[in-house]
Length: 69
Image (cartoon, rainbow, N blue to C red):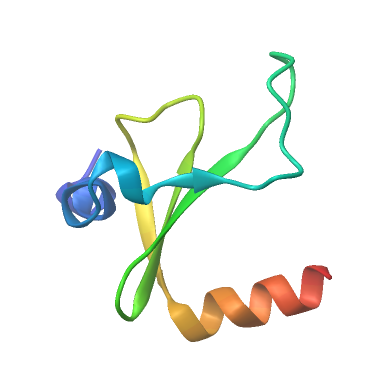
């Protein structure tokens, strides 16, 4: 794993990460956690909170969410 894969983890403390309210904890679903930073969004697997995670520009994340809706 590259150093960049941990960058989002270094930039956001654990309290900054959250899961969607549509996520459930029944043990079977694949969920992501996000951390909204100043001009980027950190994205990680909610079941692997120690990494890896990656960063995307806030504008790209907003476009993705709009498209999914």
